[in-house]
Length: 510
Image (cartoon, rainbow, N blue to C red; front, side, top):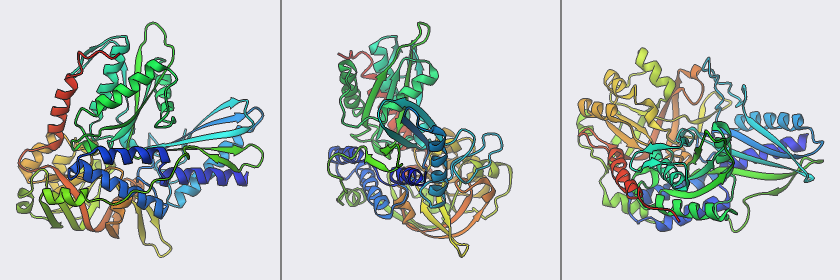
């Protein structure tokens, strides 16, 4: 059992900190296909740098280490209860060591267990097989991409594509629409797993199962293999691009599975996964509990070289250095497309903080300051100080009901997140004199490196991810995507990608 627990701990840490070789090849190909000097190319360069940093530091690639899902195959007679117990102990230790963010939240009370254990968590699913070893698969799928999962019940009407019927063409339309609706909120460029058929639950299960396939495998169903190739090619013509900034690369992989259904139901279920495609698998000796083999391990492990896209992008656009507190005059001078480098203090704030601020006074003076939509991985040192281990942005659209009102109420001048926000926030930015800055989703090590000190924390009762952390930063880089003049890059990309999506309305897949 001690060996098994160590094997599970190693699996968790490797999955969180080291992207598999097939995913690295897909990111490398994306960098080669993107136009140099663009915001999308700069984003891919930052992603590549982040992958290297996570590998070097053995720290989480993305601060949102997601909802761990284990899929396990065991020989007949193996004690599955012991395996589950070993996984739970390994989860607690990995969380304590900063390899996982404490993500298990009581759905009724909102309390965070702090251990990643809770009712139903982690998800562990067993299946028996006739092999003599244990196979353990793990996927860490964060909330940003999980929230962009989507399920269609055919027939249905789709924006830009019209009616999707109960046939292969209707399936084609649903899958293309799933990529369009994700935009940059799921940390594109991403991967999708698709499940055709089943009921609502088994359809999503089948879709998620596809994410365990190799990026470059060949679907044994030739009709689905052709559809996978078609979707990958077509989705990259939508112009959504990395982080939703526009560009040539929107989708890195598409995997499709099929199962039977009942006559009354026809579901197409899509599991969206961000570029931080954290899934790994091991074969474990059923007697010793030791790892025999790591999956996704074929070929050379790619480390990413530096290139000039980030520098070229910043040369092609205006780079503005800001130090908080920031004046309204400084904010009004910013325009969509500007690159901003921030130094000074910023405050993290996610869902719990925004709800709290909408009903209460702020524990700190936010006038002229920045709210960072971030739920970091934080370790507490022996001397009582805190250390940020990972700190990328979370999806901002969840704060749309609160953001504009909070900015006006407390004088907040900028918010940082990913994926953009909606019309209510955009109107508030124009009225109040505020700006939205898009950081690179998933780049948790890149941004953690910009954080020089944790100066304090408030509202820690909400749990580490949801607390208000006071951070001192240097050279924190983000892109203005919504300005105080009513401009929104996110709205523009959504409009143009919908127009491009409509070009596929009458195309017939063959």
